[in-house]
Amino acid sequence: MRILFLAPSYPYPPHSGNPLRVYGLLQGLAQQPTAPELHLLAFQQETVEVEENPLTGYCKTIYTVPAPSRSATQRLQTLGLSNQPDLARRLESEAMRRQLTKILQEIPFDIIQYEGLEMAIYLQQAQSLQPQAKHIYDAHNAEFALQSRIAQVETRTLKRLPAAFYSREQTRRLTAFEREICTRADAVIAVSQEDAAVLHEFRADKHVSVVPNGITVADYVSNSQPLDLAEDALVFTGKMDYRPNIDAMVWFNNDIFPQILERTAQAKLYIVGQKPHASLADLSASPQIELTGWVPSVLPYLHGAKVYIAPLRMGAGTRLKLLEAMAAGCAIVATPTAASGLSAKALKTMIMAENAADFAQACLRLLANPDERATLGAAAKVAVTTSYDWSILIPCLMQIYQSVARG
Image 1 (spheres, rainbow, N blue to C red):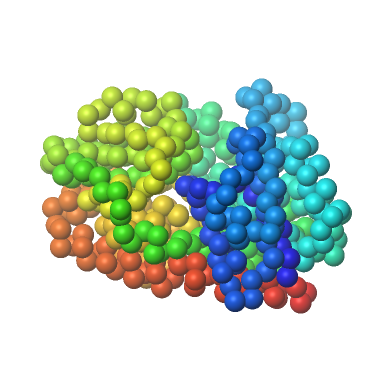
Image 2: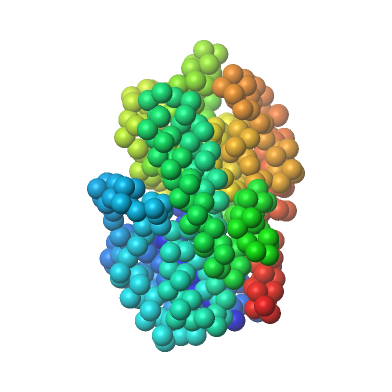
């Protein structure tokens, strides 16, 4: 079986959600007893040659093209002069279309897999060039549902009403676009049962497979670079130019963290992630908050955390950040939104808190109780190992491929 993956970014090193999933899929498939022949076409931020790394051993060929950039003016033009969602134009690239055409004219594929809605814009082109291949849409999020939740949150704050209007309009456009992609694809994969439940309405056969996000648990168990964090270290990880993560940290700082600091002056928040948004600049002025920016590994922070926090109020899918924290044995406090998509077994290993007062109280409780932290962390490791390790998930993906190939 020969498979071409189309990815929105080169998935190495795998430091954030999308690269983590794509890297995990490629690594897991390459390690199967009857491994398919894998090919990768991805955008890359720098126009440099791909250096030797594990991906070159997993894939027969790797092709990259420079990632396109879109100005605010171009985004406004899409909003005002078309009926397309912003996501449908974000990775539009003539260089990608030329490279895709060249590859498909030279190599016949059994399966072409589109990683996320941003890459599904190339589905129609690929279908016209290789109609005999099976085309699979791997939905990293139910994007229209995500935008709908964002709009609901933004509506609660007067100054965020323009953003809420934008998200409501994007929800309408994404619904139509996502329906078109799900209809055109030969198969659709979702990362959670919740996402599958909304996406299946876009399919004539009402069928959407589920392959959750996963990790290689063994990579997170030990920490070779320990950090000396604060006595009561609270840790959050994620790309900090991503809207749900920004909202989570602003809400935590404004409504939750002050309640914690009233009870323990030793508490310190570590926000670990690349590209901190300008709206978070005020947070870094506090001696109780550290914005790390990009780090080579989140492991030292996960292993140094007293409590891992996930105060997300918007989002969809399965949070890779939570899987990483579970694998590192963290005691976790999360909102139901942050933990959506996880199994009932996984949910039992963390404390759920929906409002600011309950979230603060849960953090304080864990900071004061090392035995409960240890118990939750140990249970989290078991849950992630038995349900979300790639060794468990990849055989399910292989079964999907075999089923799709049979038609």
